[in-house]
Image (cartoon, rainbow, N blue to C red; front, side, top):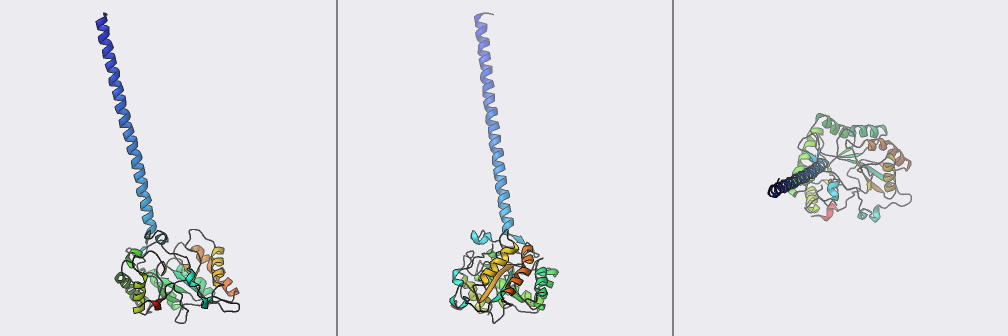
Length: 312
């Protein structure tokens, strides 16, 4: 092989090497692009799953499929949308309600967000101790829950309203939407139980930061309808993700010891089995304090963050 042939072969070898290197670069680029795309898909999928999970947490389906209940994160993230703040405002500590030695303690146990599967069990415990309470209920059209509404009334408890849909974004969108929701629930409870409810509790309380509409507009609606709303000045703490029987007993008894009138916030949702378990020990502890446990009625000292009589 002469020098010229060797040179040609060398050029061909170098050309093949260049082509091979170019192929390798292309393969690496394509592979890198595929890896990046795959990672992006994983990240986006994770984000979608996360967002769906958040939506699921914000929307609790009730027996009526159009109903939505917001979680307590609603309140903390202002339309993350709830749920229900258990903070007790310092403004609740009105001088005339602070207990002094020898004062009688009147206690109003109130249950929010039902009826649900635990409501009957709560009613069983209340019946065992011959104690009457107050239930701020939402709208549920199942036959089982209709029976619970009737049982609440028949056994002498107070039937209050907590909104029909319990959808914060709907009820608090305008005073008109709020009024329609209240009217619907009031009419529904009257139809099911024969009793017209006179009491209301705002989802999230009257001092919630969820509504973009001034809460005084909603209070005005209730005033016009002659419906009295109640906040609370003692929280059982049972909206937390983890709480014990002792937590509830301690939270309530310590709170009750401060006041002559205590409106206690509890819940009777389907995840409140610990609340059911704590109710008996709580009643015993309150009775040991010689507290008088009553259902809300026209004689109850009204506990409100925003005073209804301050709203025209």
